[in-house]
Image 1 (cartoon, helix red, strand yellow):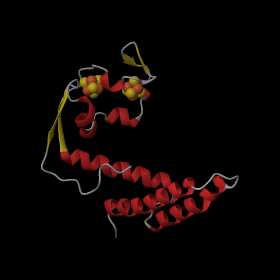
Image 2 (cartoon, protein in one colour):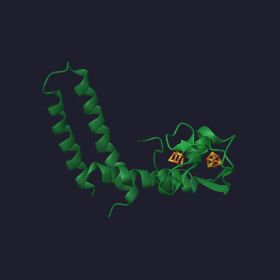
Image 3 (tube, helix red, strand yellow):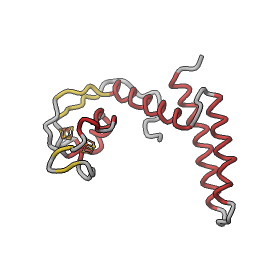
Image 4 (tube, protein in one colour):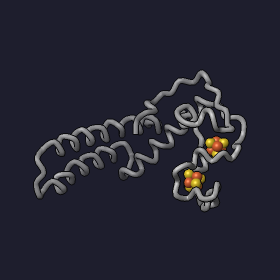
Length: 145
Ligand code: SF4
Ligand code: SF4
């Protein structure tokens, strides 16, 4: 029985194949049938994904996201607290007068923010949270997606 991580790894191979074929498709001159040419590529990807237990593309991407999030949670210990600086909301259409106007219904990724990944890349100087790197090495490519 394959683990979730193994299934995600297999799924990535199939999605990468699709992306490659999709890129080649768009290198050809455009013609009226170009949109229809995507169908066999998508069907092939979905059928391959089904062999790893994903019934559709969304199931695969959801599992991929969960896998990556789990890896980050092992790589970093989060401490400190939000100081409500608002930097992580800058540019969002729901950020008005220094507050989130949909706070109770904000998307899941807003509830989980910040992760170690965002912190390393963007928020180190402003954020009230502190991330400490553990010795855990990710078992999966975190840049994929
Ligand atoms: S919490 Fe999310 S939805 Fe709300 S303002 Fe910030 S980025 Fe936008
Ligand atoms: S950047 Fe950090 S401290 Fe600032 S609002 Fe976002 S989570 Fe809170």
